[in-house]
Amino acid sequence: MIDRRTPLRRTFELHVPLAMIVAFALFPYLWMVLTSVKPDADILQWPLRYWPSQLTHEHYVTLLARTSFAANMGNSLIVAVGATLVGLAAAIPAAYAFSRFRFPGRRALLVGFLTANMFPIVLLILPIFVLMRMLGLLDTFVGVIAGHATFAIPFSIWMLTSYFAAIPIELDEAATIDGASRLQAIRLVILPVAMPGIVTTAIYIFITSWNEYLFAMMLAGQDVRTVTVALQLFIGEFSIQWGLLTAGGTLVALPATILFLIIQKRLTGGLTAGAVKS
Amino acid sequence: MSQHPSRRDNVALTPYAFLAPALIITGLVVLVPALRTFWMSLQDLILYRPDAARFIGLGNFVRAFGDEVFWISLRQSLLWIVLAVGLQFLLGFATALLLNQSFWWRSVARALIVIPWALPSVIIGLMWTWMYDFNLGVLNDMLLRLGLIARPVAWLADPDLAFYCVVLTLVWQGFPFFAVTILAGLQSIPADQLEAAEIDGATRWQRLRHVTIPGLADIIMTALLLRIIWVANSLDVILLMTGGGPGYATHTLPLYAFQKAYSAMEYGYGAALAVILTALLMAVVMGYVRRSSRGIAT
Image 1 (cartoon, each protein chain N blue to C red):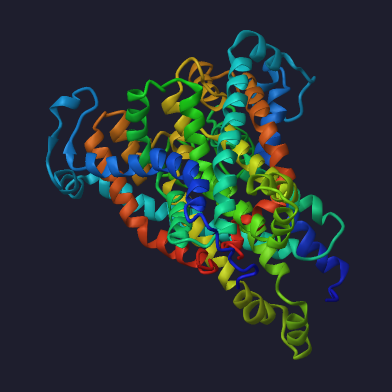
Image 2 (image 1 turned 45 degrees about the vertical axis):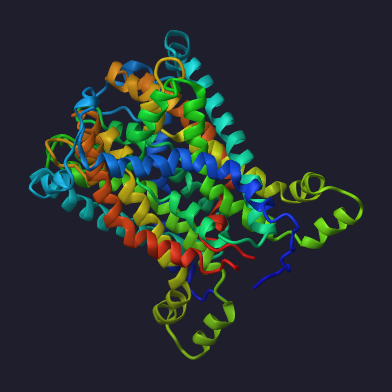
């Protein structure tokens, strides 16, 4: 449609309000990053000094050299990669079954997975804690990874099912006629064709796990403490050292932000398509 | 709408074998714990005296109905959902309408506004606590410079303000979800419908009211239900920003359940509160599930 508004009206009806919304969305983030590169003297100045008198990386150096932060980042990376692998290993076969077979209980199971995602975490976390303690999995990577993978599995199954369902079944059949077994057909046909969907799902699981706090806080002690839990503990420990805290925040936020920007367009489709097209 | 004829397999068990890993892990981490919580809610159970657990039937639920903090938490949960989801929706809708026009920095704007959605709750708590800080917070500084307040305000320590401060944080976090979902919906509305309305002399407002919004009703409903479930269940941002305080000012139902279970170690009562939350959400969950599963072919 042709926009018949004058440039002036367009400025006030479009550019100004949208710029304000973008500023609202970005300001807390930018303020955190800006604080992290200010010398302490600037941070403690009142009225505030908005632009730093000089840029400094001292908070980052202190954070990485004097605290366990680097090790916590490592733990988070292990947990998030582990959760991604476990989540995909469970979700890919399940999505394959949902997209390629019609079997009794199919609909009930699909709905069941969707519902599993809707349980309040407070309902689950207590018995999971007890269960993990019983199995000796408290403060182990296995425990945290299993939890994070599970929380991501339902959404991953729904998303992958719609990707797999979009692949014509004739492709599988052609492979089978050429002598491929079912597993070969999956490996050689389905997985390569569905790769964009699989990558999106993988990144989604990674971000969910990297960002998660409550579950990791409950299950991880000293040994596998993730970076979100560590940062929260720093807030108590270095309560007024905002330079250090914002440096930590910036480092934690970075991977999630970058990965999210990569997949966001496809993720929205998956979230709201709502129905598995089949 | 079956795109591919179902391929009858000789081995009827094959699909279940493919589903087994997902079923086992989900059963172990979701289903079994959920059932255990229901069972725990019927007991008088305190963490370090597991042997002293007594079956008390609905005793915990009866206790909740006589518990003043339960009612405070419930009322605040409702207000929390209405305000946070409502404002997220309105701001998200406005953003989507703006982004649905063509202008040179549109793709940049679209990418930037999703950033709050990507961030971990711990970072959200951290950055907002820092902005709300009494001594060095940027919010106090800006409002003082603008002359809107006479002296610094203790945003998160004031029982009258803390709740709304956390709501604002939640609005910030959640509006991008509505913006991108509604934008996707807007782009699927056929342009000829809008053009036809324009030719018929409909104003911009009338086109919005009679063409755009009805066309979006479905997607808006799904997004609202999904978001209500998320916001109703979420407790980490509140936990990180105020811990439910000052006093009970920012208590919501999941937060109260969590605190009873962890700080007070009253597993039985905490479990009962979690069960009440789940029961109250059931209608919303059912609504969402029904909409989402409409397209499943059997």
